[in-house]
Amino acid sequence: MISVSFEWAESCSVRFKVKGHSGLKPKGEDIVCAAVSALTQTFAAGSEQFLNAVCKGKIVQGNADILIKVPENKSDELKLLTNVFKHGFRKIAESYPEQLTLI
Image 1 (cartoon, rainbow, N blue to C red):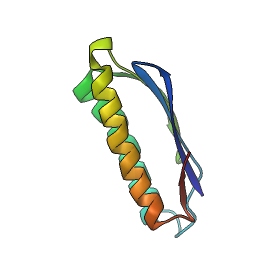
Image 2 (image 1 turned 180 degrees about the vertical axis):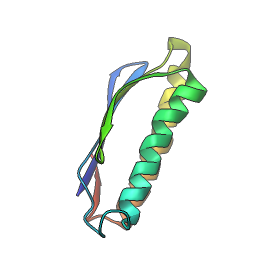
Image 3 (image 1 turned 90 degrees about the vertical axis):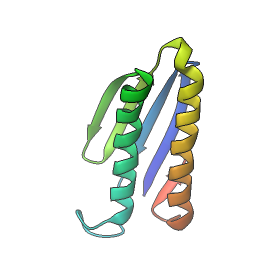
Image 4 (image 1 turned 135 degrees about the vertical axis):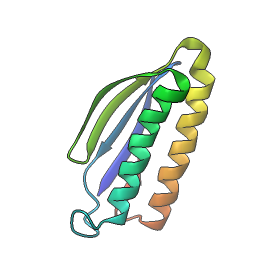
């Protein structure tokens, strides 16, 4: 099972973690893993590109631990973007509750 969590470190930074594998299909054929990977990479890259965020952490073999920090004047935008991505993960979890949990 994949677990996804978001934790606010302060008003202008969020720690984002993804752990585990869905196990639905073999590596390279798993739609849940592909969807989670796409959202994870887009959240980090989008934060950097559109919010001038600094992302620190790592993505290794399906696991991610990333701290996203934005300038103070972008904290509202980070909250909005985080909620959009939480919604995306929540929708996947609704369709695949045995493969993904949002903590």
